[in-house]
Image (cartoon, rainbow, N blue to C red; front, side):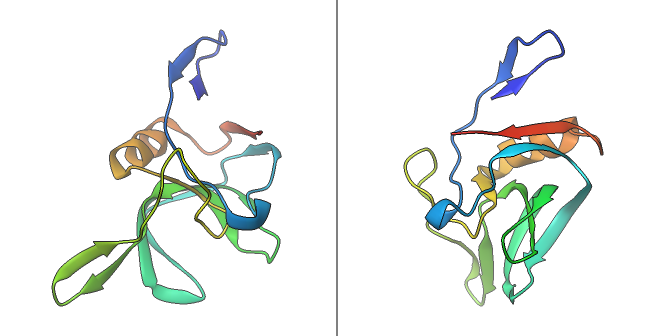
Length: 117
């Protein structure tokens, strides 16, 4: 959920978080953003609208982003992601690309992010 300064709910999103509880819980702040990026261990895994707010267990960046995809001869192929149903990421918060773009557009560096069960 996204709240305004008075605590009223602005938006809600279906998301998929990290497998094996790899999405850290706690209060963080947005520290960087990229309109396009990739997963460092496997640069063929790409994603859009990355809004980073913490580091993961292995030191990699954790943030909100659109569903990852690979570029093939047939075009972009999205990774299976059961949004709102089950974890599927390496720790990031996956969401529809349009919703990740909204988060990206409405989160400044320093925006507070609270991750909870």
